[in-house]
Length: 328
Image (tube, rainbow, N blue to C red; front, side):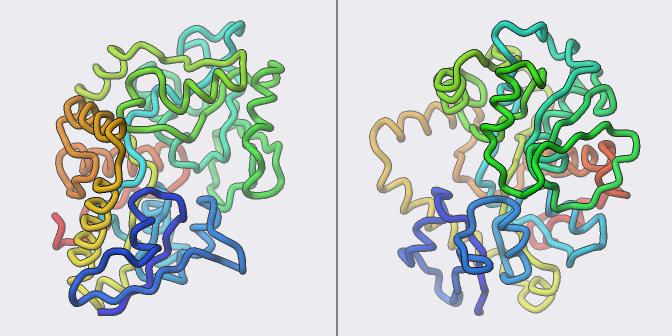
């Protein structure tokens, strides 16, 4: 079987595959890491490169949007989730601002890279389900051009960046100056989704004057245990036409990435092994366990609902439309 893989350079588990260090019998791959003569760096780049590959890294919401909107060939999830963990800590506010609780965000301006970005969709869904703050209660200030044409008729949106891939520090500066009241930060995950000391806190400390609005680990742990959801933001997806041609492709691709994960583990430092062990104990699963369990299926179906509720997609695709039958 020959497949073209579109991968994002720098994603930990993709690197052994990009470097050609792992292989699976019966699977021959061409790895694509460039689009239009430049290296793939952003989700906009992944969207632009999606039709170049049979299987590709992509934003989790983009899989749902392709399938529900009918503007591109439908894709299905292959459960190699590169970024996962509650996004509660990703909502940033000013230290000296008047926003002290999520409910304080009603009528305020919140910055996002773009409205259809997966991390911002998770945060809006959480704000509505947990705190009763609807997407239409907030003015969404977008730092880059949205590559998806979503109607969002009742949503208040402002754009401050004309080009895709604008520097997110522009929005950080707006938050620090009080021009916006909150900001959806797109990084982080794993153990540090719950506890301080990770990339989000280091970013806030480096920038100065900003912090996570939801900081209490117990609040985040309670949310995770009640909802049984990972806020999956980046995944692998397979084209429907590829799945029809090669029904065994999902299993072979999963095996390739499991071998890549083993290669990553073998090169991890003792500190990285300790952090992974903490995450596994906290979440009750191996972060490199590429499977569809209760949390993963719940995350996919909830994210699909959120896309529809937030006026991005016209319908909610079924789970059978979003996942290969061989993986259910």
